Image 1: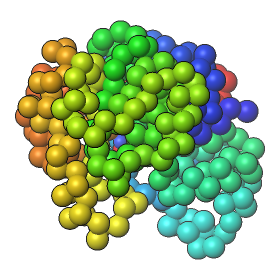
Image 2: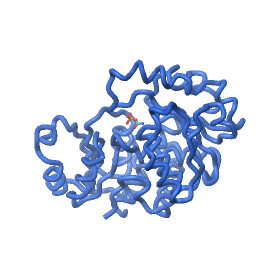
Image 3: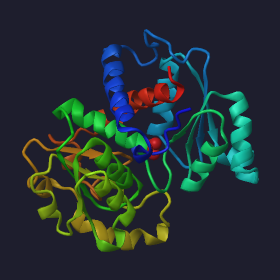
Image 4: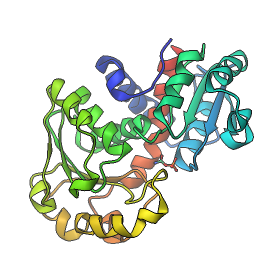
Length: 308
Ligand code: CP
């Protein structure tokens, strides 16, 4: 049984096959209306549960649409409305859900919840984001980079901002896909050292450069994310804004990257905080393709999990 829990826990050949399948499935749809099914229906007769303990637009809609395009059915569940939110254990929830559905995608707070769900489920479990990682997002980001610029292997990716869960999945991916990764941000918001150590152990170059302008020199891809994540206390908002303001991705910063550098943001964005509208809507930006590719990349992840 294939769980998709994190990029560093998934075989690199499987990751590559999923990215390639995402490209192929996107091409096969060839711009047809979103509600029309794919030509092949690998999920016919399958039921997928999408559990959300945190808000979501992209993850919720892209999984729901993707499963339906492949012939499957979905149920979208709020953790708060389940017994899960009222004291039933994760393990018991996993055992029960496995009797009803063929696959579980869960967005939750603690990584431990995801891991417990996977341990006790008898169907595949997909990580739709935890406080610690967001692997589906980075699968879409790799697909988007390669759609525009070819193989990401050997490229320079620069993350400017908070060393959060999305950065962590980029660090996981740097080791698995073989690209160089630079983190630039204030020291109190550095990523956990383990993410860098794991990437180094897999032969990737991951470094911290405190000066954002030096960091983006020669970058092929510049990435940022919201300054206050869903699990951060709102009381930290002002402090984080002050710490992160020098790391805003604006036209001056992008001008130091390679002329053909791409800009990505997983969204939702706080325009003119972590990135200016001029960059988000400018010539380097591929954020809408990035959002669309959640759909195609995740369809490939779902097929891999189910072996169909
Ligand atoms: N990027 C992302 O995961 O978006 P949502 O929070 O809207 O799902």
